[in-house]
Length: 230
Image 1 (cartoon, rainbow, N blue to C red):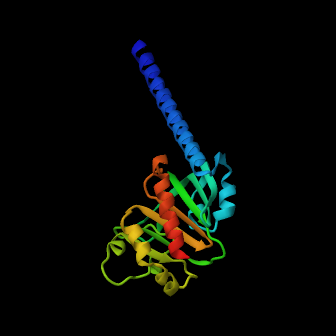
Image 2: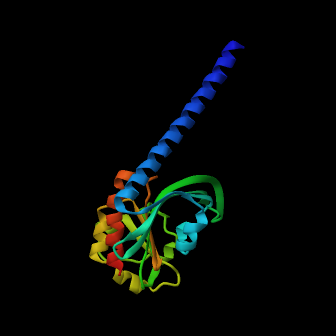
């Protein structure tokens, strides 16, 4: 009986320590984001209602995925000619599998954690498309595989990434926007995901969260992308 009680107490202590460590880790990340915001003269908000950022960037596919959204560590302001928003974006997403019978089945729901960098363009209307990783025969794009834009040659970019157009977008216009500058950015960063449409753009890394120490580098990347698309 005593052994059982000690086992339960030990298990509860372990859960408590894990919870404390997670809270401490989140607090450290929030403090680092706030410090970065001050150094960049950006506005920092610890958490906002998801609708705040969805109303501004909601036409991009990432904001319509999943449910139970949460937005924290928000940085916002102007960098150069762009309005920029950076945030930790969390949601629960259904994992779907296509079986031999060609029917789609929901197998589970997973928590997705991303750091998003979003830009607003001034007086520009870019056709909707995304750039996503190639993973075997799968498709990580928000759009159908039939909407993939083919590129000639066998470049590093075309080996790693797919460019997919929204069904209503003109593929020839999008193809002309995929410049050497843009492909060079993606070829040197192998885990990026980009969504563009209208005057809005969102960039993330397929890894979990971007580290606060990496934010400056990612801001430079998204500004380079934004300038190359104008």
